[in-house]
Image (cartoon, rainbow, N blue to C red; front, side, top):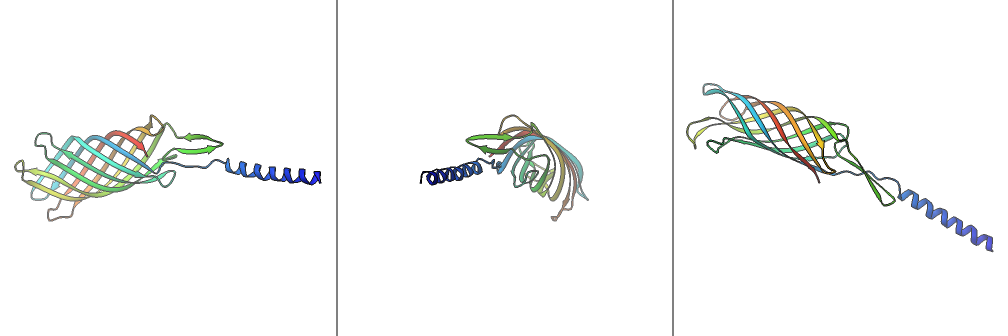
Length: 204
């Protein structure tokens, strides 16, 4: 009888041990979104047939992006950009677009939890290539502070960038990109645009 009790105790102990071991296996996890706030230089050359040909450059260009992180190296983003003229305080360029990034390595940190301890893994430097496309409006010719010629464009961009991870959730970023735009409104136009952006990123 005593032997059966001992066998039952050992069997119960083995079951508890197996359950405890299986619950201690690392479970991978990562943030779902990454926010970007950046500013920098926009330089564009534009041609509006029979109206104007010229260039525009501004260091007052701001970019706000939300990046969705469904995979380890491929992500998707929504971005909003604007550039304004400090002399007239008018918005010269406004862009809304969708795109994707391709990271060399993981796009975000990977977390694992074992027996009450949490471990995070994230490279100090993250490199990526990107593309995005969207719709923009550009003021190409000012008649007065109120009136001017504005064109509506479909734009396509490719870029390269890197993020330096300062803390677990916060990083510093630099990106360069180049794109072409094509007018589709009643004013025909074409543009070639270069952007250099500096800023910060935050996981959440």
